Length: 336
Length: 291
Image (cartoon, rainbow over all chains, first blue to last red; front, side):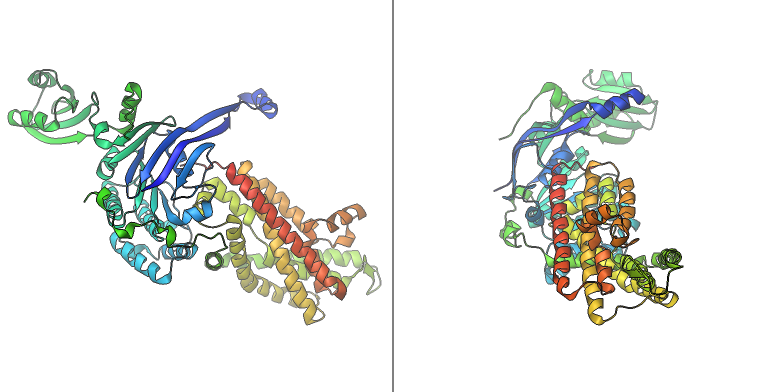
């Protein structure tokens, strides 16, 4: 059952560029130099109930604008959309009862009052029955470890604590869809990990549909099976994650520390040029390779036997690189 | 476990679970009133200094009116007001203001500037109703912890009179409540300017002084030049201060009471509707800052 249907959704912003200097400012008074900016450009897709969809793209690609339209904050310039049977903008007040939203950059809670007061207020806003509210708070407090935070005002929380409270707040009314805009931005590894685990559980246990925007390809990998990539407002990929990760020509990098001196030249010869080694220092190298040609395991097994390896870490290609690659070479594989 | 395979019966869409009617959810707005009251309570120390500010205003106008009336026979009236009525007008006017004052315009400006306005757009609530509820919560706080102490101080220091009878007091109170709604809805409209202007700081400051003057708080309507007085008769501002104070002084004849209250209510409704209209216009053009 599809819960989100978007067809040719478009948002155009009109901005005006200020001219320089005093004469420019005076000219601006009479005639403004308007520019059209198409932030979201004829995007179409559907989301099925229970999906965990990654909505990704570089900065300024139109991710947030899309999310704002889907959550009913922003009026689309043109195109159709239907979420849970509602038009998000036109039927905003009824529609928002059924969705939860978390912006990593901005809290949805009331700044000056204790977290639990925010929760109580939200329960009233969403008309959550007392009994159900108590049950929900208990359940969420346990998973997200909220008990020590409930009586603290939001302004005194750390970023990680705040995000946990925001997540709990967005789920109090048992929404059918959860929209998350960069939910783990600025968190440390442990923080990120606990949020991801939580999202996986929510999605699996309650069947809540989750739409997630992020910069972090690792996050996408851990959570989503399907991704939508947008760039310059256009949808450039909609399909499985595996195809993107194994794009031919997409380089991955391994950083290797040795316990003795090593030369890149020697290793380049060993693999016959299939891998490019870059010397960082006497004992530290970067190997960059294409996963379609050789796997990380193959590389490491060949090296570990012959050289004294001290430490290894594998870096995933970042999202900008993936997007650039798809954009340049245009393998727009719209999975039906 | 694979998320896609989980399609148990618990995961039916929650649409059926909650009512989807567009009626005002009173419970939600009562919660906003309560929260605003609690918030004010947390910052109550700030208000004790406010008592002195109000005392200062009343003193200044008391001495000005005394100077204006000096040299006239005791009990003489200027534009229909005796000195004693004038002093009462000033005292009751400022006490009422300590209750009906609201900062809705300022709050909306802050919400738009910080982008927090999206918090309200993401909820199943109407912003105007939320703002009004918060103002009610704040004014309830003011009534208890601000207006009452101010009244005690002012009435013990100045020769101001209480209303002649209980009916006058009741009508004054009712009329002040309507004045509160008129001012709150004007403030909401001013706040809507924040969406198109980058900052409404200057506008708000100008509005505050204008309201003090045009509402009749500083000067009763008969003291204005004829053309302005006639204009003010047809504008909403007098509903904020002048009309309630006329009730206080018992200057509205019994047969005119229903019409006067009805006119105030009509202004409240007109300004609320104007606010709704401006709000719908504003969100259609809204671009949220940041994020």
